[in-house]
Image 1 (cartoon, rainbow, N blue to C red):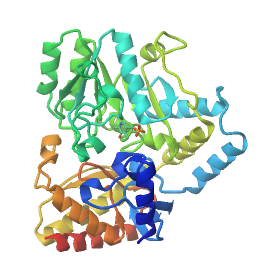
Image 2 (cartoon, protein in one colour; image 1 turned 180 degrees about the vertical axis):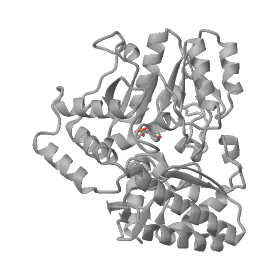
Image 3 (cartoon, rainbow, N blue to C red; image 1 turned 30 degrees about the vertical axis):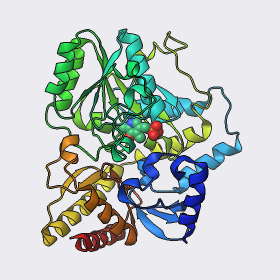
Image 4 (cartoon, rainbow, N blue to C red; image 1 turned 135 degrees about the horizontal axis):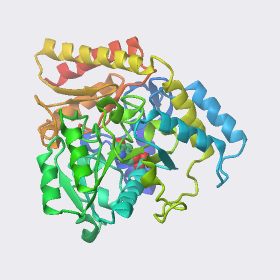
Length: 426
Ligand SMILES: *Cc1c(COP(=O)(O)O)cnc(C)c1O
């Protein structure tokens, strides 16, 4: 028995499903998760010493690659000075300033410990300032696991086929209205039926949690106009897209000015961080300046701030996103070439360094489109890739991430693996 397999069977007795987050299980691809012992650059190493080219990147944060020296040094230096104070530090100010400088719509920001906390707090803020209860979210978008946001959510609930989680009171879920991504009319309907009742529209401007989706022309602009007209806040959940698709996230790419933005993943440099922020007129409503309450013992943790600052400092350097784009484009072009040489039609969505291959002809613009994918085929492909040393997310409905550490050689090896894996399952 492999060491991973042994650790998994032991863990299952102590930890539900043997994992501390459901997406890590290999449920939908019919296998057992690998236990990881370490990672460096673009590589991840399992408990049996097998080395893989990693396209999970801890589900988004590791944009620099693993164990980046400057980040490790920053964390070690911070740790020497104490790991938590429960009092403000200069580093919190520094990271706040860096985030506000980078993300166009953000005037004030508050640090929290996860993306879940960020979106949960953003929703409370929107409800608090509008004095309305209802929110609109999109089918297949994931905003963490807070009660009202688990309705028709993406990521793990989508992969595991859990449409609406037990434990979320109906009274609570009824305030969540669901629309279809890229379908403005499906949002208008809610505003027509619930005038003056909708506090916010929340979305992943570039969804990654039902597989990567690209906003169609006019969709994001339409949401901005619709929310403005009806006095609802527009919340961009950029926990995944923030500092990933551009320094200023999706809002910079598409030139949209949301009221509130949520961040996480990349801004923590691999440590637990989330953040929410936006217009000062709204953010100043948060306690202690205003009456809307939100707090956190470890919020703004010095180790996490140090990792975030080091990561953003590197991302700010000229040429970073161009370099990510070059590697990602080379990979995308190569995948397309392999597919066409084998005569397979697979939908492929990419924006910058995040992409998804869907096992359907496509096009895929929303959850319904993604669901045409042949999940069984994907599972076989996933296992084939793993066998060839390529570590992908164990789900059809997730994004793959390229990091700055991925090399031309990684791309070549990935393309060879892709060809072998496809040939095996055709
Ligand atoms: C990952 C993610 C979250 C949740 O963040 P956690 O840190 O896992 O709580 C929220 N929104 C989006 C868009 C995400 O990708």
